[in-house]
Amino acid sequence: MSTTTLRPAPGGVGCVPRIVGEKLRRAGLRPTRQRLALGWLLFGKGDRHLTAEQLYEEARAARVNMSLATVYNTLRQFTESGLLREVALFGSKVWYDTTTGPHYHYYVEDRDEVFDIPEAMLPQLTVPGVPEGMVVAGVDVIVRLKKAP
Image 1: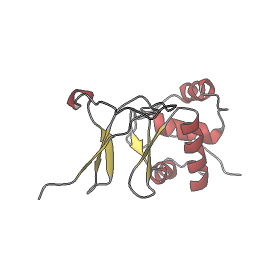
Image 2 (image 1 turned 90 degrees about the vertical axis):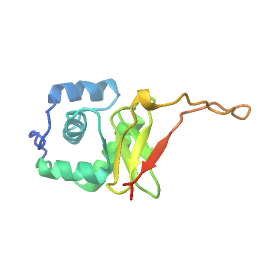
Image 3 (image 1 turned 30 degrees about the horizontal axis):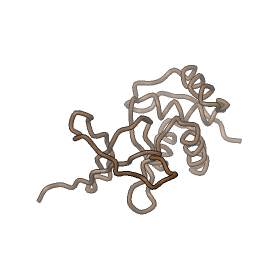
């Protein structure tokens, strides 16, 4: 059995584990050691976007022992319970966003980085009509960027 310890994440502002436990319970998840540790890493640094691999590396740096599969499973559970939002990019790469409300993203191809587009920079977006019997479940906008030549 692996052990999970909660140590401050490098460069992080920290997050009280009790608060993470409450957040998990409100989402209908049992606060296991793995969920608490990953929740602490995810939500303790403010709004962020990261991949499962990035979170796994942060966990390793914080001396949280768990497999990459556990990280993927926990991210799936957090997403299904509404704690995270998936941002699917091109190919099979998925980013996880701690901001779950409606908003849009920039993706910097050269740096493989995702960040929010400030709301003030967005024009009014009109969603086209939908077929009968359907409703809009969400609108995803990703603006791809690269360094100018």
